[in-house]
Length: 276
View: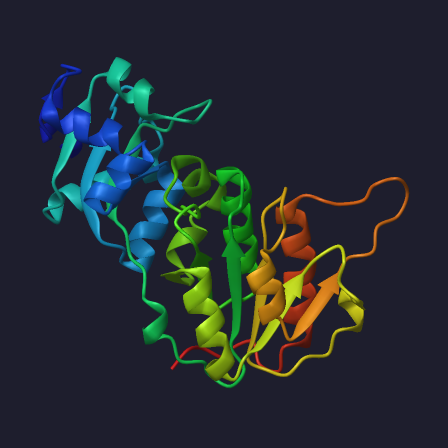
């Protein structure tokens, strides 16, 4: 295999491995503006979406999938830098129960809120303080499936580049436009955006199925424990709830997001709308 020409790293103190390991931490990601992906599906989406790939890392002893080998060979031949990791080093990086032997360093990409202009029928999601990275990744994956144009990441605690989030997103992280901003910036933007701002809360007065909003629209999802902050509730043009039955008084944030995203998607005038 051509990828065997990549230099082999066996020392856990090698700076190249230390860089990879640092990206498992929030501090390492914030300082470098980089993050890790792992797995053949994620790598294929990186190539498809032309995401800024910085470095490839492989464990040839595990990389047995023919398609995965072909991707690595293609990237190596195109000049993408890379390294081979000894199996014990690769295992320190992986979250997978059955590792596929390939991963990459990617440059973080996001817009500022001042760059956002709403197309007439566009559909956005705003996420505030999701407690579990895996839930955030599931929400991002569901948002892509529902045709969301982009996602507002409200507050520093929303980290879509956490390895658990990246893994749960199943490659969907590279599709929607990501906008990082504070709650205050979003609230100020929403007043002049022309978009319908839809909050979600167990205390909402409107059943989510009864909602008929104007477009463009932004659906807001809050944390599992606290829900939306008071500032965002006050920002809402509509505050919807999902009725509960039985003894359950709430559902997982990712499940709630999916229910509301697909309901709104079914009402969207044009699924092909996009941001200007």
